[in-house]
Length: 334
Image (tube, rainbow, N blue to C red; front, side, top):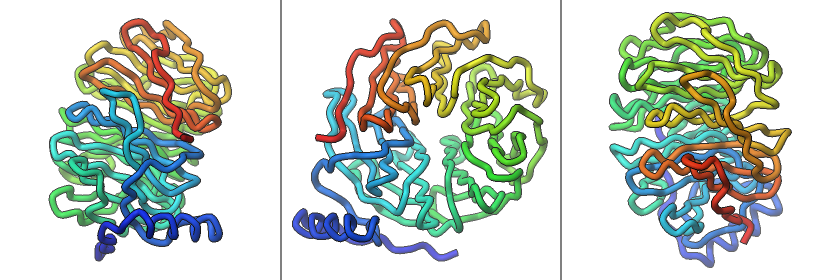
C-alpha cells in the first residue's frame, strides 16, 4: 500500500480556520501540526515515552493528540492527526509515536523530537489498537471490523504483512523479549498469539466475555487482558498460552503494567476508579478514585508515575505508583 503524504507545517491562523471548518463538518480532513494547545474532549488512548518524559493523549472527538510535559505536568502542544484517533503506541528507542485513526483508516507517525506528524500510513478499514515491539521496530495495528492485524516496519513506515485473527480485534500488546504479540478479539472472546518473526498466529486462547485491551510484563512473560462484560482481568502465562488466574474488576477497560514493580493498573470506566493489581498475588491491592469515565492508562517506567485519561472530564490523573495516590490532575480543556 502507498503511504499518504502528510501536510507541511502550517501557521496557527490556518489551524484556526481548519478548526472552524472541523466544527462545521465534524472532523479535520487532513493531518497537520498545531503549534498551540487546543482544548480537549473525549480523551481516550494514552502513551508514554519514558526516555523523553512525554505523555501523548488521543482526543477522539477533536482528531488531535495532546502532548504533556511530564516534568512540568502541563500540556504543551496539540498534534492534529486523522479522524477519530483511538489507541496510541510509542517506540522509545526511535522516539516515534503511532496513532490509530479509526475514522480515516490510517496510522499517524509523530516524531517525538518536535511532535510533528512525519508520515501517514494507509492501513485499511477501522484501525483500533496499536502494539509496538521496540526491539524489532515493528508496529501492530488491529482492525476491529476486518478481523486482521497489519504489521508495519517502523524503519520504512510500510505494511509488510496482514494477519487474520479473531473477530473484532481491539487492544494489542507486544513482548519484545519473546517477539510475541497478543490480540484481544472482542467478538470471539479469544486472544490471538502472533509469532513476530513469522507473522503467523501460533495459538488462540479462550477467555471471558468481550476482551478489550491487553498488556504484557516482559520480565515475567505474563499477559493481562481486560474483559469488559466479564468484569475481570485474566492472567495468561506467556510460556504455555494458558489462563492462570481471573481477577474480579468492576468495568475494566484499558490497562498498563510496570514490570519494575510488577503492578498492573486497570481503568474502571463505570466506577471512575483505577484498580491496582499485584502481579505477584494476582489480587487487587488498591482502588484509586480518579476522574469521570477513565479510559487510557500508561506507566512512565523511569518515574513510576501512572498517567490515566478521564473521558468524562477531559483530564489526566497522575498517580504515584509508590503510594497509589493521585498527585495531580491535568486539565486538558484549557
